[in-house]
Amino acid sequence: MNRRPDTVAAFIAIAEKLFQSEKLPEGGRRVAARVFERLQTPSDDGVRHHTRYPACEWLDATLAPFIDDDSAFGAAARAIKSLEPDLGWSRRSSGVNGSDDYIDAHVHGMICGPGGAESRYDVQLGFSLMLPHTRYPDHSHPPEEAYVLFTPGEFRQDGGEWIDPGIGGGIHNVRNNLHAMRSGSVPFLAVWSLLTKDGD
Image (cartoon, rainbow, N blue to C red; front, side, top):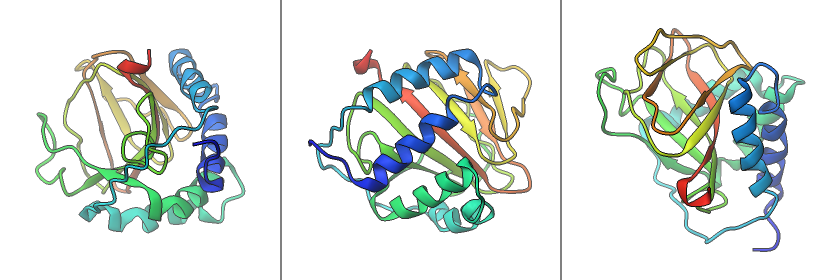
């Protein structure tokens, strides 16, 4: 693949700026910089995971507060909306301490990564959406990752206290650390960038 679709290129450019924010931990900015360095080279094997899940129906409502906003968040929301037909969808169905309905109450949208709008395996760039009052299960994974929060929400790492980094803030998850997230009274939306093990 020598040229990526304009919709994917637009989201990558917007997301790269969001992940440079001083509101993110230094480690998060560092891992994101490596992700975007790799994304300078398009790569797509054509695999698409288009199966939709119940939480996908919340995407419009979750994006609505940002759609007309003249900010990076507004630009990102419009880019996600334009990408919706090409997104790869997935959800977690295992883990401990998740809320009773978390499986149907969350979804992940893959933009760059396995089965995404640009299906590749060296990095992942996408977002997580959760319905109000949803607690994502505790989980861990080898790849290092960073999150940028679009909405009110909280993160927990290694069994510690729940923290709210604030809109535009985020977290950095090192390899294999236990982490989780939860929403409050409004839907949760966070963008993430992830370095796969094979890409290191």
